Length: 127
Image 1 (cartoon, rainbow, N blue to C red):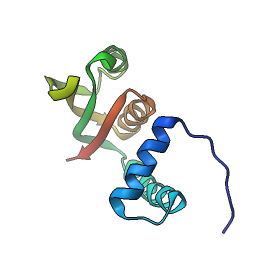
Image 2 (image 1 turned 90 degrees about the horizontal axis):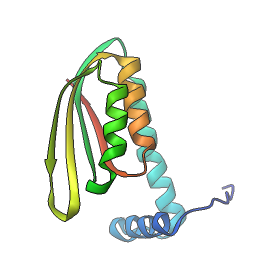
Image 3 (image 1 turned 120 degrees about the horizontal axis):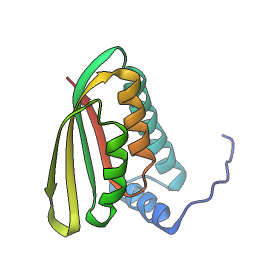
Image 4 (image 1 turned 180 degrees about the vertical axis):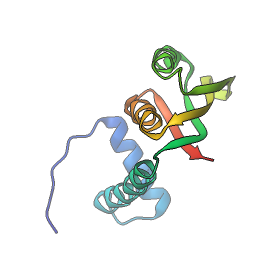
């Protein structure tokens, strides 16, 4: 198996070690492979979005990171039909977006949100 060197932040390592421990994996390499399989499955789901689509996008973020999502939301206002915002415990917020539009625009929104490191969770469920 090839060896690949990567740079990770302290937070990345903490998360990787937690995944390794929680799943009972032998080491970090195995944890990275599990994460890659999960990312691959998400990419396949995202790639399957096409044509006119409708669904729900769920986002969880820290309350102090809300301004970034507000700015991003304006870029996609033509496909957002409804947004619900709720304050959660521990200084977090939940945003639920009902979206309808061309699959390419929905994918772009999903990818842009996924790039935002302030978002802790994002998932699109197509109806």
